[in-house]
Picture 1 (cartoon, rainbow, N blue to C red):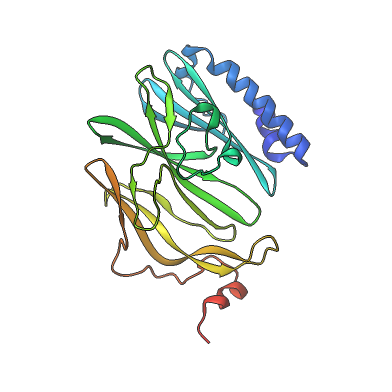
Picture 2 (cartoon, rainbow, N blue to C red):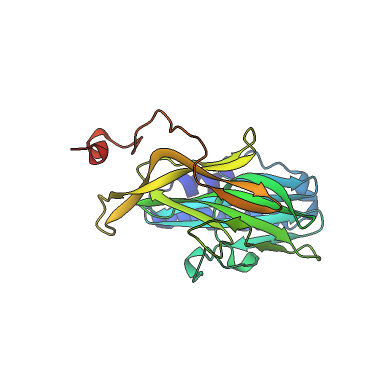
Length: 257
């Protein structure tokens, strides 16, 4: 599998990267179909994210840059009894923010954190993920994972209360590929924190504006099973400036005349 992973990451063109991705996907699917493989950490695969729901269930995800403008994903949810393959259908979802989907219509992402919470007395899970998305913009998201009585995974649930967004089953942030943006659970504050984004003129022909951080933060705090929006997490902004991380010539767009 290591040679397929290397081809997926270092392949010189789209064809060779996708060949590596497809071959690695087949090998993983075959391996994970054996329930006993849940004890295999798979740490030798550096590009594979493995997050544990508990001792009996884990979530695996993988991302491949097919072209600078197209990323593909693959995922699995493995239990001691069964394995569900997650097929990336993010480009097919009519409304990716509000749709509730199964494994065959998964919003593909590379997950980097899992956060359990309780709603209506039942366990739920937030999956924090990254999507390379396109040459000009990136996406981070919070996916909601639940399980049916028979153990099948379901993605998406209206657990977010936001004043300007409605029917939010998964939370998405789209931002400029030129900057980094925070979206994660803060265990000290016991809440989700993310960068407040503002528009900036884009350098890309395919769009007029992109979103960047202005140095302040918003968030969500759990109350009675619902993640309620917090307009400003801190009363003061960070020490950075709007457009932090941009080249110096791009930062000038934020300066007052």
